Image 1 (cartoon, rainbow, N blue to C red):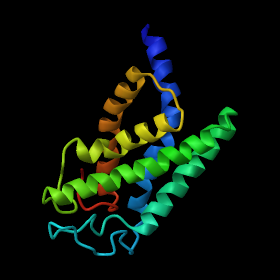
Image 2: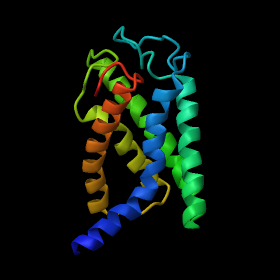
Image 3: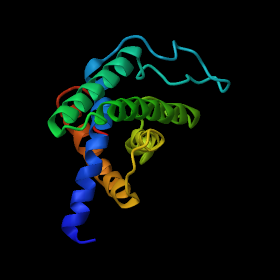
Image 4: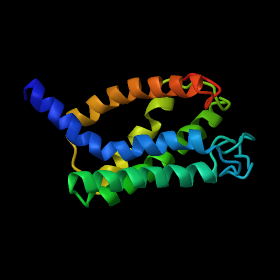
Length: 170
């Protein structure tokens, strides 16, 4: 495959992931107050997820991702993007929660960095959700978008930090 073909393949895959990217970013803006874990502790005595994972953020993220999916579906005349976008959005947020669960088990508090886990938990879960929902993406496109995701995550988190939406730039 030539460079133009590879770029086209990545752009084709991006339409499936854009709702997940938006869903993952939306909770930073929503700033909910009701933690999903309700303050409960796991058997290790640490919080299940922490205060950063809220019902408002979950709902806002899924809604934002679904709206992006609906917009993409209308713009591209691909109605199948709506359910796939909804799956990608919900999966991304579940992946982010799984990442928080893992960080708590490792003894990392909210805001402490966990390289790669912080950047790719939502992406890996969205990929799994999309695959299970029937989206067929090439391995090359998925891996290339994973690299793009690393850079994009870093840039958007830094921007959110500068805008006062996040306490840390990563």
